[in-house]
Length: 339
Ligand SMILES: NC(=O)c1ccc[n+]([C@@H]2O[C@H](COP(=O)([O-])OP(=O)(O)OC[C@H]3O[C@@H](n4cnc5c(N)ncnc54)[C@H](OP(=O)(O)O)[C@@H]3O)[C@@H](O)[C@H]2O)c1
Picture 1: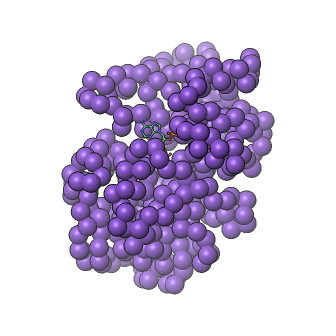
Picture 2: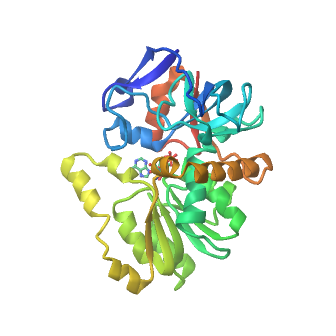
């Protein structure tokens, strides 16, 4: 079978190579999936640039999620069967024609579910679900800020927040994305390349401070966010995409220092929480919780409560272009690559 190997750090044009390798064999609690399309995630861009600590040593196959048909199951598998169309969480190994993964990261989906939507249900929707239901317990009426709201995780968070009836502020980097955010139900879309997002929020909400911020940017956005929160507020840190635009070693450290330093006493006195999320670690340490979240998300998707948010399907021949578009902030929703 073919798999896309990350062979060196750098630009998408030089970092990858398609290689021929044996088709993997599933273990007792694993399934093998013939992949229709695999998903790209921003962590893959971080891995390509050498900024992702959890990435296996090179050369390796990265990729967190895929959609396909089960063709072999291990002897202990009970949740799914051969022939099922599934969405799956792969813990790397995703950029391949066949994937072997534990059944706790797999869920059956309908045969006509669009590829980007289906692929978004694991990594991105589960991250979104965990952020708003576990890391920050979002309540009806809360004011919630979502950074990079037009992206894969961002737009999944928006969909799940709509069920909770909260006021949503969403940042993004273009007017096209502002229109997209209006379409998917963000009450206050803010193009932070054109306007100071903090001023905009203060203008809109007056003295009322925010209840929850979901931050995937890192750097100064964390420090600024803590100041925008009111008492009882929670900042959920899920990423550091700002770090990918650092031009050199010093610039990267500057962005790391911009996160700020927080003493527990200071958070206690202000009654604010700071929370970190890493789905790879969570899926490894709490696989049942992950499967439970995934099954709830599948029910929402199959009932139409959760809907497709943009997304684009690239062919494998356009793989480099897809990776580069994700890095250069040109994508909306989930990006997938089909074989
Ligand atoms: N902690 C976890 O377990 C977990 C799981 C999944 C994803 N994540 C994180 O969630 C974030 C979103 O992931 P995703 O896969 O859904 O990607 P994505 O949001 O579809 O794409 C990244 C977006 O981030 C924004 N961005 C802001 N500053 C950027 C910069 N300096 N360079 C590049 N992009 C920048 C861009 O949107 P605008 O131009 O509109 O701002 C871009 O489109 C990432 O930070 C990712 O690492 C974390």
